[in-house]
Length: 297
Ligand code: HSE
Image (cartoon, helix red, strand yellow):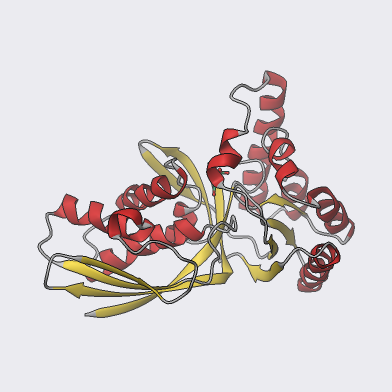
């Protein structure tokens, strides 16, 4: 038995919802092919040249399959061929796609023996391998689709939200920002006044998403805690944000831990104009960049 999956990129945090909000988008996406093996081994193959490890215990998809196999006491194994289009280190949920894709693919071959919460549980081992932390804000939208709220990751409590009809523009400038480093630099303590502002933004954003209130979404896409620290790692962040907002973006910010930046817009034309703007800003300073115009998946 053989299956092929399309696994979407994801934008984690949605600016103010650090580690709790995320959305799946149409572009870019990975493709993963799965085959059940009669022998117990796990075989991982990549068709790209990103240099990711193929040894199962060191591979994000491999570790998820090892954990599922151990949990279910399986005598069979899996072969997985990964066609990766979501660039590793982009901040667009590349590791989450491999981890979530592995859990979903294995589950289909095993005739849906696992629940969605269990898929999230196993996929989080992949995130832990990739970044040292078991966060589910990329995994959850990758598995459930659309926008999700990770109300809690232990115990796993995922709330799928509404998917507003919005366009997403994302730019990936080719600079290195490791998730582990981007987490390390964050302050461990925050001021109550900042927390209150952030609670207002998160609640406003979730309300805006549920009510399709685009103006409310726009004015809630603010982050007083993480963005001021992390944006320093991303060249031209302030310029891109400022100019995108002038081009009628509703709002946006860092995608996950960066370096990608995303913007939401109501109209496709605005999303395309922002794409041109992002590209020209990075071209001007000779930073290789990849731009995607997409929708919430
Ligand atoms: N919520 C995580 C972070 C996402 O911002 O560190 C990492 O992809």
